[in-house]
Length: 252
Image (cartoon, rainbow, N blue to C red; front, side, top):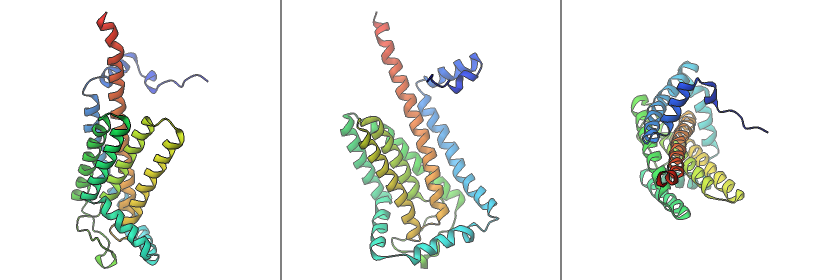
């Protein structure tokens, strides 16, 4: 079956050549990340505004309250301990430790410091997006009387635990996918990462720390930012391969 044509082939020759040159520019990955950071930051605010507009400002009562009440009604000692463990793993100190451990493991697996150069900007951007969303939206968390410790005081939207865990897990899954050769290992890592991000998000609602829509926004915005980071990394790899392939001809 013949390869599908690239979307760029539909463009006129001049714009297509300009895009190709831009993609191989040394600053293309960094430029893409800065552009994506701004776009995803805007998406964070727009997501909240669109949601409020669609639900006529009563979205909490329509969706969030019933889900929170369901979680409260099904709380158990074991689930509470698990949710609290995830809360500590996703706070500033816990997330830093988890990130460093995963970063060290991937660097050891690849015998290359490159994973750190992907994970560091990914998590820095995730923290910036979370801070921007909380500062601008300023959404109030569920009532304190319904929440379990550890209690939070920052604004509710988006869920920082969820967004940061989604970004970290997406990047780890991507790096493992391009590093591991065995298919079952690849899929095992992807499934584990997806499970962690999903569990982190639902644990925030279970503890009464966030509304469900805060968590959904964390998943979606985290995936959008992760895609931008992965695209930038692929551009960087493409440029590196092009430079290596050009080296023999230069030495002739």
